[in-house]
Amino acid sequence: MSDYWRQQALLHREQYLDDLKSFLSINSIEDMTTAKEGKPFGEGVAAALEAMLGRGELDGFQIKNLDGYAGTIEFGDGKEEIGVLVHIDVVTVGEGWTTPPFEPSIRDGRIYARGAIDDKGPAMAAYYALKLVKDSGLPLTKRVRMIIGTDEESGWLCMKHFAQHDRIPPIGFSPDSSFPMTHAEKGQINPTLTIPVMEAIERNGAWQLASFVSGDQGNSVPEKAVALVRLDFEARQEVVLSRLAEEWEMFLNKNHTTGRMELVGLGQLQFTLAGKPAHGMAPFQGVNAGTLLATFLRAYPFGGSSLSFLTMLADVLHEDYFAHHLHMACEDEVSGKLTVNAGILHYDSSEGGTVRLNIRYPATISCEEYVEKLKQRTAELGWTLSALRTSKSHFVPKEHPVIQTLSRVYEEHTGEPATLLSSGGATYAKIMPHGVAFGPLFPGKESMAHLADEYAEIDDLLRAMAIYAHAIYELAK
Image (cartoon, rainbow, N blue to C red; front, side, top):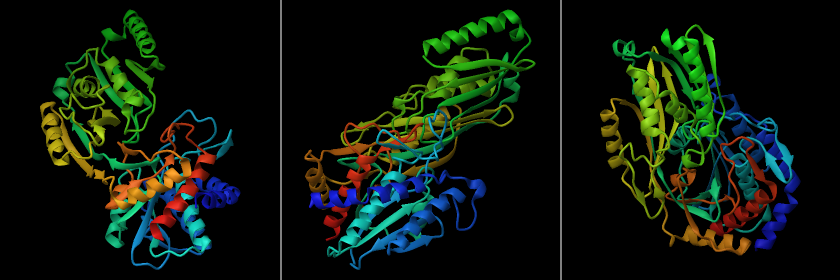
């Protein structure tokens, strides 16, 4: 039946693109300044949810809005259920876009916009897959439910709310990863580490860190860092500043990056450094601007909490992607090594410092054991674990019927073997007892999720649409 689903997807190409462009035009970054009852994550996220549900209502689906936290689009009458779980919130946009991130642009067969590949483009493709199956009139024995989340990029409060007020399907897929399919996902440990200001000791340092800001998304590698430094009288001398400027330029050249050092007031220097963004599940693919800037500043005579903050960033976290310095390094055969991303770094001379980490632990490892290791190491370093959020890992054995069915569908459409994958990413698939992440990224294609100029290849989205439709039919028939 693969030819049938491919033909149906192609027939809906223009309608799909029109809907997708409109959908991508909605700025659905979480904005708590506009949050209110019925819009718990802000106006933009709520608008995206309403747009998706409105499309479903026009096409004759049963829809439900769960207090703005989540929504459902469904059809069929069976007692058993198949889940298709998507999210419509997106990460912050950052810098370096060729065209505005919420003005979708089609160039060379690609659609560029924030959310094109993560996860609005695939979500709309999955929705159209539901529509293709519904409109086909083919008999089904199970109910098909698309569940739309609104807080996937932040705290998953949407799915917690959904689970409290509705039912989670036992099997299904989430179009939020790579083909063939991801059957093992790492769990997450998301701690906030803090250190207070040590005023008496702070004054003994010749230099003081007035402020330090880097990163605004825990699951992204920071692409920019800005530090404001107060100098003592001797450090303000022209000859010292001249030597410092030379050392700064040498540092930038050595690390193949760009930045600025400028006087912004009497005895104050501001340092700005550019990094390379990447998804938090693969921090080694980026350059963390915050920890890199700290390695430069760490060489100068800071004291007190300024020194402790810079030492944490430079000596413990910088390029230690697998958490050896945190005494948490581990791996398994299913999903590989534990990784750590220092996503949000902040220091203020009157408040102290905070570091928010995104740690992704292997699928078969005990979360509790490694939380204890983190607590012990944090205390040894003189920091406090002030907040902690965890999410479980997920693993579906290859023998399970959902994997067998999706493998068969994928192989029929591509002619390639359905090799099972593991991921450091976290998708809604893990909410379902036997859920997997299924596409949309095809083997060999680059992922621009969380990056500037995020895009999706249009032909690949249509190809995924056909695969999703076929998969939904096979799971629900």
